[in-house]
Length: 389
Ligand code: CTP
Image: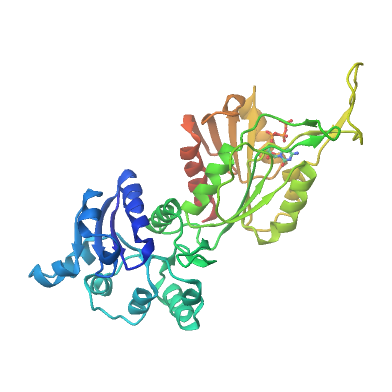
């Protein structure tokens, strides 16, 4: 687990940093904090210290410790994250101003930096501030977590709000991993599709969409750009990146094929209906007599798109089976020209855990047993990263 130095600067959003500290400590990281004097106008050092396990430093320590605290902290940290970061501190980093413990530490530090800005929209959009942001991104490789859109401290709605604490913690870990999916756009489809029979009835399946939710989260945790194409599901889709809601197999096909050009990795975790009614009834079917409905196959999205797959593009599919899992998965890998297939048993449907294997285009197989879908998602994304190399 990593050593993370969190810099807390003077924004009213600083109280949320206490939650970020807690999330990071819960994930097993060692956290130390530098509180600037402006930040300590919003929260006291005692308050922050009481809620964390690690050490907390203020500018008073900087001037009274009698040792090179900034050098020690710069050597100690695997990552420095500034949460929240004011426009003032952003500009100080840009121009290498070292007038307090945090900025002096940053000047002496050589590792990865994450910044989670929080300010009013007018300040964030100020051209000088945007110039600073661009410079820090491009020349210093600083990772920006947010800002998010929403209600700001002024009561107005705009861009400048501190990113959610969960997402900041995810981004801090993505930076630690070295952002292996940086600049890679990954499309994840999940949920089930529904094919209408009449205005009130549908044919569908029992997929929960949980696997796709965790895959989407993992894409962000590895620093990728995310597009989610989500069918019917009882879970709330993962709230980052682009989200497109669809209902039928045809709608899912249209969205995926439309956007495929901008995608490097397609992960089809959706449980697409294999059948749709030959005929769609315009009026609600009435009860009382026998009913025969005949079905026809829906579009096989992966199979259809395998023909237009570009060089370097990577397709990941799933095989959900009740029998002959390995044989069926191998066939699907071949027929749909996949780079990777996740074979799992039908018991995974609606469950938090799954058993099965990953089978890649070179025939390498890796089994997993009763693995939580969150961990399985990480395993899949790590495999994707290695196949992209
Ligand atoms: N899939 C697809 N389009 C479909 C059906 C499935 O793109 N109409 C994708 C799924 O998202 C999954 C993979 O193909 O990644 C395999 O899906 P699965 O339902 O296991 O297999 P099918 O190909 O539908 O074959 P069968 O149902 O006969 O096992």
